[in-house]
Length: 144
Image: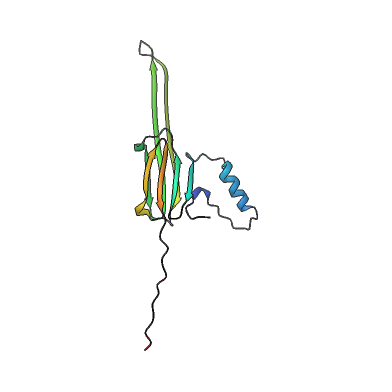
């Protein structure tokens, strides 16, 4: 399993659960009955993770990607108002809707300063370069 996981998928188990992996697979496929706002796909490539978030109906200006330490939060807010009036300026129909969505991800294995974001056709795509593995230092000691 790779290291870029949504915080919502983390489970704290203080006991041994032999069906934990099966339960997590079921949760990932069917959801846990909670509205999380938008679905994401995360792919792992050799040098980076690619996160794709389905966010149809949002404009680019409605979407925020915030990084705080090892936590990345994607949030979006939608406001919509429509009204129809007759010729006497009386309301026939008036509707307002508001939605705010947010998801957070652990990015401890990602070079946060090099993340790139693109929004096209209702899909937010983030390129998340992996941190390079620290090479063990090799040296020879002088014997006194």
